[in-house]
Image (cartoon, one colour):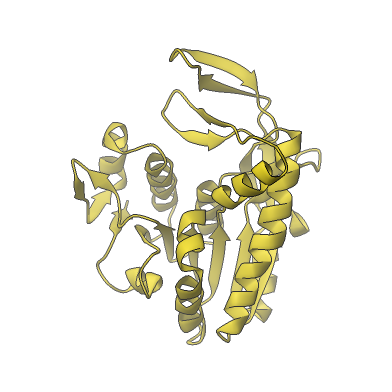
Length: 266
């Protein structure tokens, strides 16, 4: 079993090839859990509804979407509805049995709602604000994935979780992919992006240990640093290998078999 996560930009530019690449592996018996992002598409639909997307930066330099009640409604509609089902239909087109769910379905992903979050304000000072409808994943119901993968080769997961009071929560897709890979003891975690790997000092790193990655966090750009952090957590928890690679090539999953992208091991 492998876990693959693709960001919204990679999907927008290369969904056909990503789906075909997954279907090719599924056809020879590989079980795939595919976690998708899609933030840019959410922002597009928000603007159509006269909602301006809001992003915040944590003191650690992590950029994330701020999810209030209005944004949550759009997030659920786009991620669990439109995008999730488009991915499922594309996988079906290429001959693989696929089913799509959100993390709320069957209580697959459980999360704790963040009551407050600390952000950097416009003057570069830390400030606490209400947490909105963002969650931190605390549990993965592995039985849900195992039962679905008994019948389907690919499980497509939208990053929405069920809160402790059964409220819907936006959860980070990189975090979701890492937590799923850890809970199901996946062989590999592959994170597909719109760049070729982790860039430090103008060069793509071909490999690093989790310890090396933690030391380099300050030199890794905003956006990529979260991916590296979650990959490190995954390999330290028993996932065999985490790979950050491009989702923009003809066969993106070849990163599982060939030395491309950045490979992170414990």
